[in-house]
Length: 252
Image (tube, rainbow, N blue to C red; front, side, top):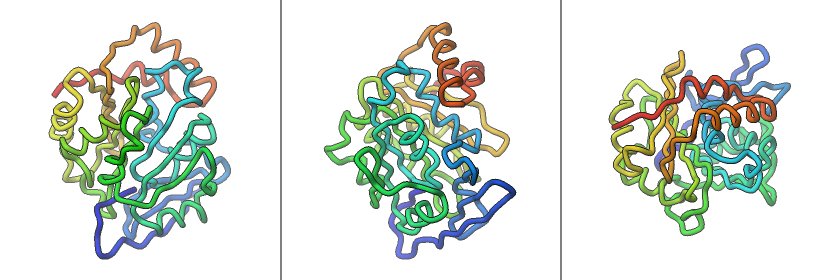
């Protein structure tokens, strides 16, 4: 995950819980996880839900699209988009230790022609010309070692995120933390994307709420969503049939 620039970045370590390995930033909070014997499986329900943008595009076009993660975490989304979806994938990460941990402990491949990790501040990187109108799937998961609230959560930041999206592009955001406010974050997203562009899941048992914002608001027919959900589940092993039932438009 990414945090704002700081004189001292937290130490990165990991723990193991049966078949699952967890990433930590110097605290008990889990910043990401991996099933050791199946490193591209998305372990946590909220991480799976960060892929809900798949319901809003033609599955046949997915390998031709661009994914961008703000916050590397345990590289779960980066690996999945690169290896399973065959997308061109970039992740932005501030802490070099997180990148080293992902390469050493979480089976993140070296940079290649379709995948790279950029060390930098997400709030600055997202503004760069190369991303304007270029990103189909923008996945934002930005927390520091205390996991109290999103590190970047302003209307200006979300406006920069919107500017990076293609016309069919979607941003998914993980909202979590003792100090975070779901409604306040939704209001800021609505300022940037418009009130009709937002969708949300209910919170998971762990307290993570995933919100999606569309560059171009749409309301696909339920039959279309169900057809895509069946494809997503059969080809990529994600519980998309459940998404259709619990993923709803949300208003500021």
